[in-house]
Length: 476
Image 1 (cartoon, rainbow, N blue to C red):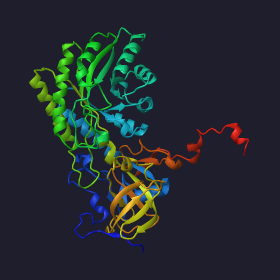
Image 2: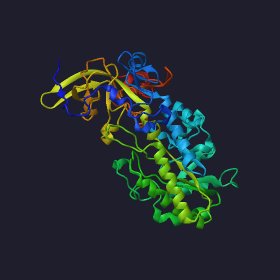
Image 3: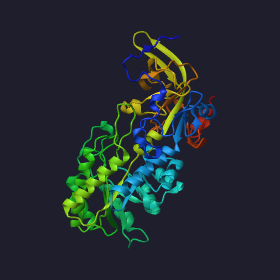
Image 4: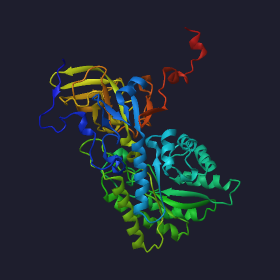
């Protein structure tokens, strides 16, 4: 038996894994997924094990290996429906939610989102191709990015998606490409991104609304941008975009943003630009720990919609603009968990007790990048008392490869299945092959059925792009 750091008796984390299962008495369809620590379908089965989507997590690992991303389809669909239905309920004008696919771009996710009536926001040629292949309608795709290549711009034009213009180089390139089209008599619809000068209390790397940002035009240059567009027959500016950051719990920034953007719309119309869409971006946060208290999806949409209506009334606008938003993390973050297998353990007397899992920073780089916090349960010991505070370490050759510090867990042993919650956003999409470790598989679970949506990489996959010059092979 190894020594461990004890849990203080008054510590609220001194309970079993059951405490993470339910945080609301509402029916599943009414619970806002971003406010849950585990997916909506998570429950304890008769074998003291965690189930998600009707599937025993321990059995999923036995079948598909670990690490393993487990995506709950119902949670993802519910979040989509909350955005779609809240927009219809709170905003009387036309509206559309588009999934910020950078959170997790793969065909299965894009197909689910599209089937629920949402579009996608893409930031690369392959993200665009992924959405199109999955069946997302081109008129529901917007193309972001601060340094789109000429090839990507050509790809966007050919596909018929809306480009959100980020800078002067892109604007001038698009004007020329649009003018060279066979149907150049029909202006290419574009939207323009500006930095609104609104900051939020979030990690500095994911603040994008303040003035000193790599994204978007500076608002001081707005008149020059609008004047250029008014004189460029090949382009039609149909909308304005701004985004203020990510993992935001505050509502005041989303009250302020529509006020600012309606002012931009008025200025754009002074230049006779056909602006009819305001895209407020996304940014709503999720619950990673017990201390997190994000607004519900419905409450966030209500705040944005009410502010937009108020701003338009004050501006004397008789017709509401089309309202777009771009949720990413709040759609998919809480819908997924990552299952690991516990391996070695180490105690540093008087300091720390480590347990090691078979993944880490290659499948979840957020802790080492953003110092992000997570919670975990032992899937095969859900009712066991949390008796120790441990550091969950990854297997990579980095001292900073720590998944969770001070995780409250029951006694663990090699072979136990550790489940880290809230890993649907930016885990797979930011995963790497550091130390030449293959990226995990992902399964979609629903109604007791599991389907692989991303195959596990193999050593051969990692080496297939290697090229060994002949002079090196002959020297062996």
